[in-house]
Amino acid sequence: MSELARVQGEFQEYLLRGTRAIETRVVGSARAPIETRLGIYAGAYGSRLIDALAASYPALAALLGEEDFRILGAKYVRAHDSPYFSLRNYGDLLEEFLGTHADYAEVPLLAELARWEWLLCAVFDAADAEPLTAAALARAAPADWPELHFAFHASVRRVALRWNAPQVWKALTEGSERPELRVAAEPVEWLVWRQELRNYFRSLEPGEARILDAARNGASFGELCELLAACCGAERTAAEAAALLARWLGDGLLVAAAPA
Image (cartoon, rainbow, N blue to C red; front, side, top):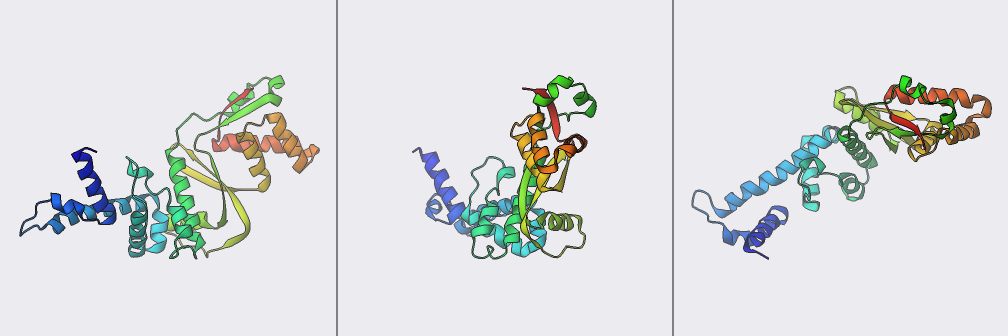
């Protein structure tokens, strides 16, 4: 190991865990002792990471309040230093941390709210693409429709939540009255996506969730219709398929359709 790498390692250990080996390499003065000089960096490093967490989890920060969120942030920073070049990626383990740490695990809404906010960040950062239009889809040859496969916008995500985290998030980020916390008997399926620079989300009925998952996993339009027939009846298949496609197109979820 080079001397530079050794110094860098000692400095990192001081920032993350407070080990003092680096002190032998720092010159202090009466006006600025070694502890003061190093403390400036240690405080700034942890504070910056906590600020990054607050930027990714604004609703969680609002729910806990500034002081309690910074306490949470400090605990997370001590447990998880940043392995990333970009602070945008820091905080990816916060859901797991909240779900397992003794101080927070008894309030499972916190972990689900963290999962929701991290998902929204991923949706917003996803690659952009021009959505498929109804006119473009209508140009598909009738003979090709059974074998059409659909490509979805890169931002499209699915998540199942037991708590009403999306409603809580909406109220906290908009400054409106916070709803009463509720937990569902069965997980609620949610769809999240982005159009231009805005995230959208809506809950999904179990039937649409199954069809959507099948389509995203590569099922053809003919196979999707078979699934619809099994759950809705053959007489309703055409209408249900048309309604789903119209909604997906309107939401901007689709970017391409082509036979295999």
